[in-house]
Length: 389
Image (cartoon, rainbow, N blue to C red; front, side, top):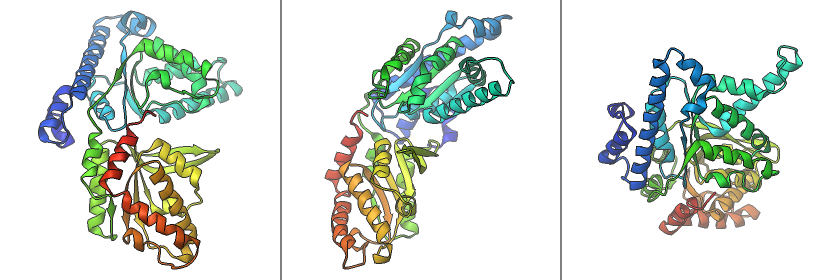
């Protein structure tokens, strides 16, 4: 069903049911229940908006006394591919608020750090006398959007962890409503992080201002679609490109695709395209650049479905790229990652040299690439995505 057709349905539940009726998704009781929760939140937000507008002093009370009209948001956690983001995106589109924002949580935090640094620079330049950057940053963020929707809420950076408690206390005091999706429940955020005890007050504040929902949906419906499609496509031609796009679209389901980054030992590794737990690279992105096992491991830790476009036939002259590809496949295989690849040849014909270390090692790589197409492997990959993370 097209996005334009969905506009005919005024609630999250109705949109969800329309997608199920059209066969675009398989109806799931847990997802339908969450759709109803989102509709209740839309009603709460709309009621506050109308009440605020109806009072001549509403704008004053809404800014200075939000404790009298607190709306609890939603924190939805569950395994990858359960429909969290799809339903939140429906909520974000339908909630009748102009000042709303939908962002990947790590992108939001990067914005926050930029604002804090700009304030500190302004203080240094004598442009402000306020030492503490948190209140003005919270003011600016709340003025920009009082309904915040975050995808993939996760905390891995100590710089983020140290400011979250004060920042979100300030945002909630300003009446901000938070909706977030995550792979982990709040108590497991920043689980093994440095100085975690300094982060724990944020968890308490978060749980006071959101209802926590465990989306225990039936299955990863995206991988169900993907498992019915070929995952190793060759040779490189228009037809395999079309099938690759079909598989990618089955995962993305119309969600916004964006560039992402992971930090490995102080270096930044770029993920050219990422959406809903899946990452897409060209062969050159992964194997023509000086990447190593730690880089691939960091990518796989964040993304459990990997697309690789354009694997060429390799030979002795490209042994460095072949070596990286061998390492990449080993890590993908060991971590039971779901992989979709377009390649010039079948796995056993991808390395043309008959001698040398890479030729010997590539036999194992070819064997693993064949196995990664098997039903047994694909079922295991789906199970790997369901592990808590």
